[in-house]
Length: 368
Image 1 (cartoon, rainbow, N blue to C red):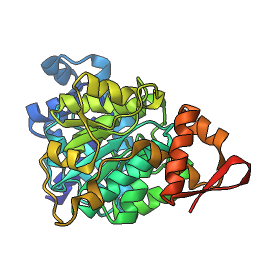
Image 2 (image 1 turned 180 degrees about the horizontal axis):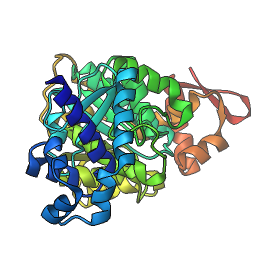
Image 3 (image 1 turned 180 degrees about the vertical axis):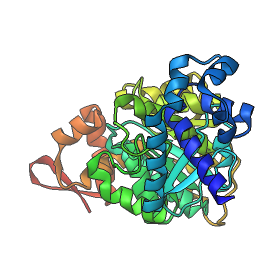
């Protein structure tokens, strides 16, 4: 029995390497023939006739190089202690399995379950503003305060992604980082320590084999995994186009809930979010209670809802976040916030009266 399972995984690995992004073809073949062993029980010529696949694709699948690479990959995952989930096998996340282009193999490093009762994908621009970073922090912390032991899923990228991962680790929520490459590699290198912590407490996940050449298209392809693992996708900040919006589009095709945090009308980093809301493709999120309502989640912790879920003071929060780096001049705050100087001055005065910040000499401000 063990030998047959080993053979099945090797053949599945070969399928995954060959058909990963051809419209769920590997999944279609697996469903038709019942198993990977059943597929490879035919000759390459017969399989091409039965399926109508191009001869080159079938030849690549049956090639000696592909089979050797698959064998090497299986041995490597065992050596590294990486979990390998097979489509329809034990442990494969049900949410993802129901997606039409679900991968036939999924690799995981880390102890977290991929089938948590609640899961939320949080995505956004790599060029996050202080407002976007603070809002992401607030959302994740509020989810924890409300007792939602939900998985926080994202893509380990700069900006919104890494913020969601970091705060989830801080507050004890399981977090899942979906890689656009194999588990033998971490990119960006600046996030290596965070990825290692996720691998110890959460889960690093991919359907890419090791030694995958990293290219831009991989990041778009992996977005289907982010969307497929989640109950819903929350876009915190996004420009008019970008990977976060592609993730939202994929999630919508999977019948997932789409949500977006609004931003200022003239803020380029919020244009994508504002468009989602304006076009009624994403539910507006002003507080954690909006997320609960859209996903049908009930808070597990009773108490003062304003402690966790009062509406975000979006602009003031962004100013406070910027000042966490140290004292800033009014000119620097003007460039960061893009507020009209009169509005900025009024808000700085209000924050000073609330004893949130202190005015220094030379028109500088710092946190109290």
